[in-house]
Picture 1 (cartoon, rainbow, N blue to C red):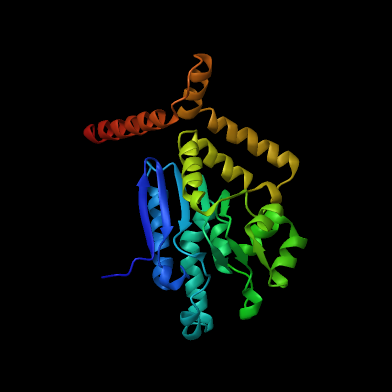
Picture 2: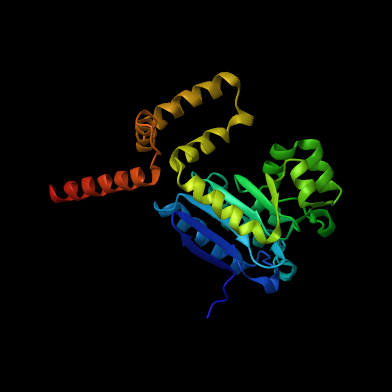
Length: 279
């Protein structure tokens, strides 16, 4: 029987991805990467999933690379193939058109930080620690860190953290903008799920579109960004979520974005059945 490294559960419209191999401190073994890739693909394909929540179990969120594997698979072709496979699901996760919440439950080392920074909102437990670790091992920062980290905390702070092999407490990480919030250890799951459910009840598809557009902000000038906003808004205002939100405001009631999404999917399925029946 295959050992479970990643556990996937559903809580309403929230898909929970939990790292559960406490024995390896949730290090990025081949099995871990494979199972996490499957979970990401499931989250992308399942239209019922409106928000993703990623966290770990035990004393570590993710202890980084699997050192035993690295000892035997560090030749150029092995590394190249490993990163090509990793990119097949990690890059889509970074560009995910659904909100992603990450709850950092403990120690997070090296590439594990890259996984954590795939979240749109990162919440850390009080006991969490962020450990650079790359140069201690003699490798460059990876798992998207050289892209995400400077954008979050600035280039100077990113260099100081990475080059100095620093360790940040949860509070220090929040002070420099690495995480959004710090909560008590026993409140992490509760607070993250509460936020995930709140986002799932909102216009999750429009939030996903906003994520996609906002990701271009550092490479795009003002005029181009303003144009992108306008084109994106044209798409946003053609959505069922906009129609539901507008009607709810005019009728002075709470918007039901989840039901509007269900109705939209139902219409699409009905249209497909009709199209097939006329062929």
